[in-house]
Amino acid sequence: EEVETAELSKLSRLRRGLGLGWNTTEGVHTDTASELLDGRRPPPAYKMSPVMRKLLWLSATLFATSKSKAGTEEMAKVLGLQPEGMQQLLGELSMPLYKAAVSQAVGKYNRTETPGVLQTVRRSLCLPDAVAQEVHNSLYD
Image (cartoon, rainbow, N blue to C red):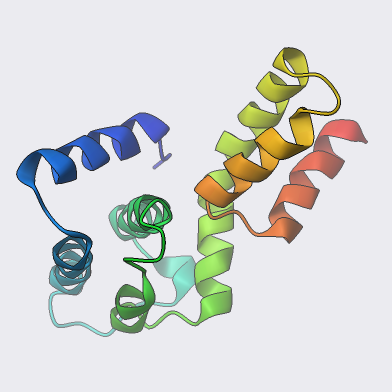
């Protein structure tokens, strides 16, 4: 299941509309991950369900806007993910969005503005540098 930035915007508006603090939001996301497991052991990252993968992506990208007030560390523990596995999943899910952003930025911004714009996009998508480089290589090779 593909992730969409529109879903992230809706989730962010919902959080603000309900008046949820970052700690509460982080707890809700972690509890949801636990409920999805339903008492079972977490699967390896490559076998994680699309719903679980999407929850992880939405949580990570939402929490990236929290200025370090929320994070996915507890959720990663619940899901049995090491930092490398989590980065890999986030990269896989964010790659199509980043590819589209690169194409759009190249057409919209000048040569000096584009790197800064893409850095912001990478940070917002929690995209590892190696995955970003892979996207650039695929576009320019």
